Image (cartoon, rainbow, N blue to C red; front, side, top):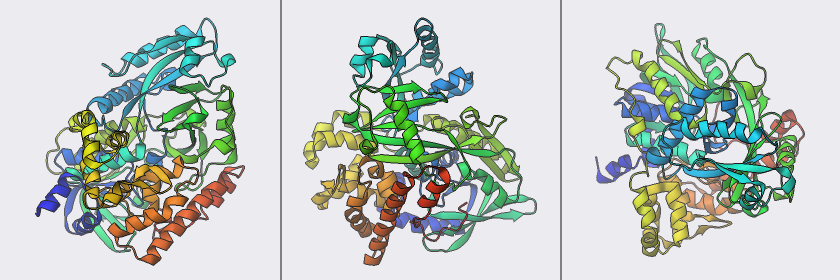
Length: 578
C-alpha cells in the first residue's frame, strides 16, 4: 500500500479514489456485518463492529446524515422532560453518554451550553424544578459541566435581557451540551473507515441475498453510476430510522416493532435578535421549546406532530413556523417576525409506536429485533444515545457471526480529530501565524475538525486562495469545501451546503448566492464538466425555492407537494428509497 493510501486510511478519508476502491471491495469481499443506513445509529454500528475486529460495510442511499441525523435540535442532553415521564434509566444513560462525548470521545465537536429555565409559578415550582435538576446533575455520574444555579428575576434578566420582565419570577441556570449533528455523524462514519469499515454513500439497497431461510447479504445499486453488486455478509443490520418498516418489508420478514414518524421543525434567527448570554428552555402546552445558541445564530425548536407523508422530504409549514414564533414571542420583549428568519429545517424522529396516539408521549427508548436469521433491526432512541444503540445492534447479530465477537469498546475510542485537540487549542495563535489566518478562524476550525485541521489547512499550502472565505458565506473557508470532497465523502452541492457546512440554514440566501463558486470548487475534485456544474446549481436552487414555497403553505399535504416538486440531487435514486 502506498504512503498516500496509508495516510488516507489513517485519516478515514472518503474521497473519490476511496469511493472507487470501496465499490470494488463491496462486490469482491465477504463481510461479517453490513449496516444499512448512514445516520448516526448506522455510523455508530459500523464503528462499533469495526473496533471489535469485524469486517464491516456501511451503505447509505443518499448522504451521511441526510435524514434525521442532520435535522435534530443539535443537543447532547439527558432530556429534562423525560424525568417528568419517569424515564429515569433513559435520562441516566443519556447523561452518561453526554459526559463521554464532552471528555473523551468528541471534545472537539461536543461543547457545554448553558440554559435558563424561567420560573413562572410561586412557591412550588422552584423546589420542584430544583429537585429535578439535582437528579439531572447527578444521575450520569461525574459531570464536567457546572451544576444548577438559582437566580432571582433580576439575575435571570441579566443573563437573558431579551426576556419580558413579566415572563418570569426568577430562573435556574443549568448546562447541557450541543454539537453539529451532521458533522458529528460524518465523523463517526469516517472514524469507522479509519478502523477498516467500507463506507459507501449513494449506495441504495434494492434487495436481500438469501441462503435457505437466512439473510446472507444485500443487493445494492450505485446511485451515481447505476452499477449493481451483491454484498455477501454473515449478518445485516437495518439502521434506517424512519425507513425501518420499508426495509423490513423489502426483506420479506415481519417486523417485531413499528416505527412512527414525528415531525420536528426548527427556525434559525440571527444572534443579535435575542440578547442573551445563554439558551432557554420554555414549557409549552405539549412539550418544551428550546432557544439554543448556535455560533452567530439562535436555533428555536421544536414542534412535535405525527407524519405519514414523504419520508425523505418532511416539509415545514407556515403553521409550524407560526407556532414557534408565537411561543417564543410570548416571553420576548422584542418579538421576532418572519423577516428575522434566516433558515428553517424539518426532520423526522423515528419513534417506537406504542399505545398512545400522541407522538410526544411515544417512547424514546430504542428496540433491537431479530427480523430473520442474519437480519437485525434497530429503531427508536435519541441522538445522544447512539453509541449504546449501536453496541446493542452489534451484540444482537453476534450469534450470526462464526468467529467469537469481542465486547464493545467504543466508550474508549475517540473520534477522528479528538486526539491532540486540547493542545492545538492552546497553540491556536501559532497555527494562525503559520497559515496567515485569524486566530478566531483557527478556533472555529478546531471546533469543526479538531486535530484534522492540519489536513484542511494543508490545501492552502500550494493554493493560498483556498484559505479565503467562501463568497457570500464568510463563516467558512474555501478549503473546507475542498476538504469536504477530498476527505468527507461529499458528492453533490447539497451535501456541502446543507451538511458539511450549514450555509443552507445560516444565511438568508440559504446557499443560493454561493452555489456557483462552491460548485466550481467541488468540480476540481470530483471531475465535473460544465453541464454537471450547471445541473448541480439548478437542482440546489430549485430545492431552496421549493423549501421556501412549502414554508408558506398552511398544512402538511400542500407543503410536501411543493417540496417534492424539486428535482433530486441523486437523480438515479429508485422510488421508494430504501
